[in-house]
Amino acid sequence: MKEQNFKYIYGPVSSWRLGSSLGVDPICTRGKVCSFNCIYCQIGKTTKLTTKREVFVDADKIVSEIKLLPKRRIDYITLSGMGEPTLAANLSEIIKKIRRIRKEKIAVITNSSLLGDKDVRRDLSLVDFVIAKLDAPNEWIYSKINRPYGLVKFNDIVKGIKNFKKTFKKKLAIQIMFTAINKDFALELSRLVNSINPDEVQINTPLRPSKIEPLIKKELKKITDIFKKTCKKINVVSVYDVKKKKVESISQPDTLRRRGKPY
Ligand code: SF4
Image (cartoon, rainbow, N blue to C red):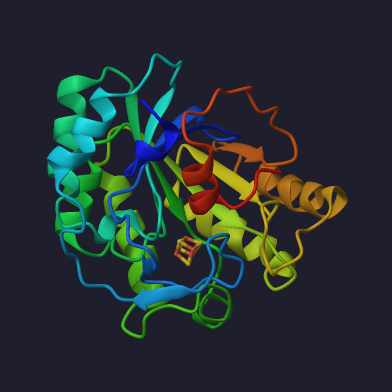
């Protein structure tokens, strides 16, 4: 099969958090559909800023593509892509249908904005690993970094993540993108993460193409040390410390469209 024939799946990419990760895009529109318009977003400006869930891609079309996948070593099948994956109203159907044909673990990378919705929490409870974004310790920093759709409030997001954690039996990670705006709030953020008590916290900075400069290693190490001190029972990982695996991709152009150029 020619690489350009893949429309809904991409990679596998070498992910510092997931190893060899096959991307599945349940949004798959030309522009980005998201409830946030993060200042550092690697796939550019949000075209459609919304919290309305809808069906973007038929689950069977995704499954048909996955069936055509050449033999590759894959650690996780990851729902992510051109925007926020939980906006896909058929997320649970997609997950269940992938499970029927593949044995790999399934992950979702979410911006956490819809975790206040019990249907979204139910959908996410079907996967093995949820990576949930939390870049700010308060509403003000949150609005500056994530530039959300107006109705999505910071306190509701934190409440949603905490409610999800109460019932989710698999692995939950909180991912934080550190930039100049939130770098001085590491202590507040580490206390907030500690109160959520996830399995892991992922300390990141924009190393893929972005309008925002990444923090240098020394700055991120200082932040990582604060988290290690505060979050003693939580696994703390930093993007600069993890060695990435070598992975053979099936779809270089699609991978680049959704992830920016590799770093
Ligand atoms: S939540 Fe993710 S996809 Fe949406 S704007 Fe932020 S970084 Fe981009």
